[in-house]
Amino acid sequence: MRRKGVSYAKYGYLFSLPFMLAFLVFSLYPTLYTALIGFTNMKGVIPPPLEILDNPFQNFRDLLFDNPTFRTSMLNTGLIWICNFIPQLVMALLLAAWFTSLRLKIRGQSVFKTMLYMPNIITAGSVAVLFSALFAYPMGPVNSFFQLMGWSDAPINFLQDKTTARGIVAFIQFWMWYGNTMIVFIAGIAGINPQIFEQAQIDGANGIQTFFRITLPSLRTIILFVLVTSMVGGLQMFDIPRLFLNGGPDGATRTAAVFIYEQAFTGSYMYNRAAAASMILFVIAAILSAFLFYILRDRDAAARRKAERQMQRAAKLEAKRGVAQ
Image (tube, rainbow, N blue to C red; front, side, top):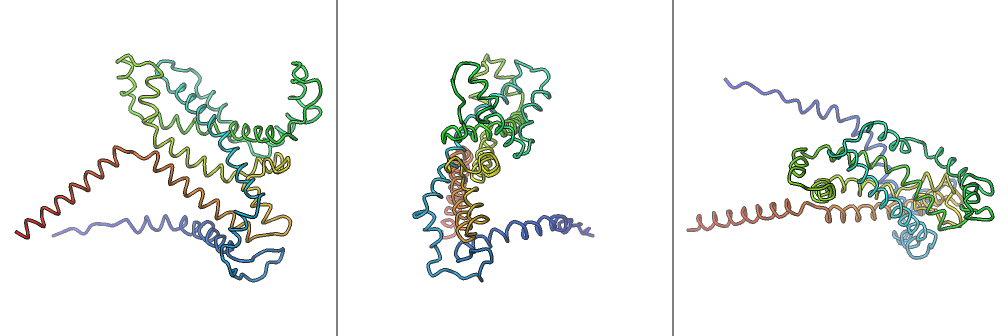
């Protein structure tokens, strides 16, 4: 007699039901509703009933072609993200390689890792207050240090210079997130077979050769994960620019997320324009993510899959010819 197997699939669906409900209510529905608002005239403290515009893409056109503030906010977002992510990636890779080096065998790694990760768990409000005090004008630690070293004769209002303000915001983002990126890379390196490093050491490879020939290629998927998550986080950059300088001076640190907040919840309450800007950000994030996935794909695996498909097609064609004969 055949014994009937027991299927536990229904329990998997049952356990995933709370997540699915939360996703549908708090993620999918708001996203679809936001996309809908972008095609309507919804605005004002008490918005009128939803009505699709005669030209559904009018809000998107106004933002892209007739709104220099939005274009400036997108430029600020890109500049601040690039200026903080490149040094963040380099620093995190170097620290991860340093902590995982078989030659160095760093002692007290837990203490160093905790200290380097600490800025990531400090709230954005606390960080904004800290750096506002550091760069305070006319009396602040940075100004006092500059005058003590003889680098300036009078106090400098750092936060009123556009370039300096962007640089400080980029540094804050770097300082807050390089520790998190370092931990991700350390976890990735820990997943590499240690025998590969030992064999490289036996073969006489130095640290630089090991890093560029073994560590970096093996971290391709981890680097892709870091790039995509950092890019999406950079497009959503809001807390530090808003809390630190409120988008100033003169809009120099107004990011796309700050622009969306200002359009939706201040002034004329342009919900339709804020929703359209959100959808533009969504499309940009999707395009950039697809581009990164394509650039960092495993070319060897793709070539193998292509060869397998060609062999399958050839086998099917040969089978058809055999049947026809």
